[in-house]
Amino acid sequence: MDEPLVGQVPEPEGAGQDGQAPQAPTPPQSPGVSRSKVAAGAVLALALVVGLYVANRYWIKPATKIQADGSKEHPAAPDFSLTDISGNKLNLSDYKGKVVMLDFWATWCGPCRIEIPGFIELQSHYANQGFTIVGVSMDDSSEPVVEFYRQFHMNYPVAMGNARLEELYGGILGLPTTFLIGRDGRIYARHEGATDVSVFEDEIKQLLALAPDKEAMSFQPEGYRARGGQIELGDPAEIDSEVPGVNLSKLTAEQKETFKKLLAGQQCPCGCKLTLLKCRQVDRQCAISRKAAREQLEKMMAKQEASTGS
Image 1 (cartoon, rainbow, N blue to C red):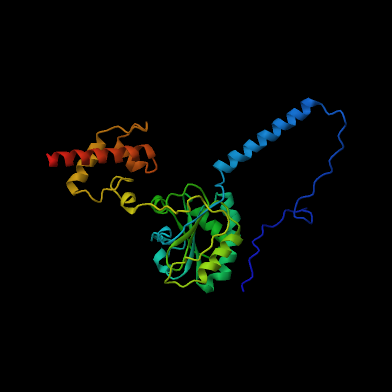
Image 2 (image 1 turned 90 degrees about the horizontal axis):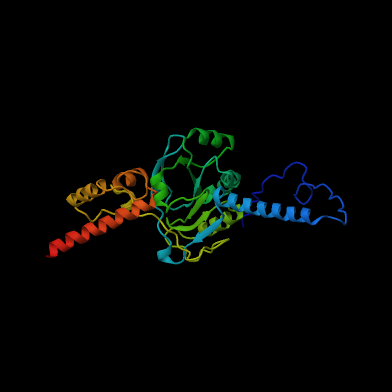
C-alpha cells in the first residue's frame, strides 16, 4: 500500500515543539483594569475578525469541494489544445486513460504557491502509475510562470490559460481551482481554494484503482461536499458564438446577421456606453449584456414565428 504524502509546510524558525512560534509570557494584569480598555480590546478583536473575513472573501478563494453524483453528474472534461511554457503542444485528449489533475493557478496567488510543493510530490509519486498533473496558469504573461517553474523545479506540464478555457470549465471565479479527471475522461471533483494534499492523494488513489473503460460510480469524495453536488461546465455553442454567451447554432446565416444588426443598434443597459453587440464581444463576463442579448434573441425569434404563422 502506498505511504501517504506528508506535504507539510516548513515551520518558521524559532517554532516550539508543537509547531507554533514561542510566545512571550503574558504580564500579570492589575485587578483594576478599566472598562474602557476592555471595550477597546473588544472593538479591536471585532475589527480583526471582519478584516480576516474580507481577506478570505476577496483574496483567497474559500476551500470548497464539488463532487458529482451518478452517471449524468460526471460530465466529460472539455478537451482543449494549448502550448506549454516549453513550447510543446498540450492536448488534454493525449492523456486519455490516465488520471489527470487539472489545476488553474497563478504565480501571484498565495494559496496556489502553497499547494505547488505538494503537487510536485504527487507527480513524483504517482506518475508511473498512470497519473499526471496539468497546470494552467492564469498569469497575464508567461515570464513569471517560466521563472517560477524553474525556481520550484516543477515536474509536470504547465500552459498559459485563456478566457475560453475558463468558460469551458464553468468559469474560474477564484484561484486555485482544481479538477480531478478519471481514466474515463470524466470530471469527478472540483476543488475551489487551497486544499490539503492528503485530500487530493486519497482521490487520486481511488481513481487510479478503477478501470479506464468504466465510470467510477464507487468514487468517494474527501472533504467538503457542496450542496447539490453538480459540476457545471460551459456550453461550447455559447462560448464559441459570434455573440458570446448566446447560442446561435439553430439560426440561419441570414438570421444571425439580422440578430447582430439588432444588437448593434441598441445601447447596452450595463452603462458601458457601448452597443449591446460590442459589449458582448469585448466583455464576455458582463451578465447584464448577456441577459439582454438573450432576451432580444427570444423576441426576434418569437416575432419571426408569429409572422410566419400568420
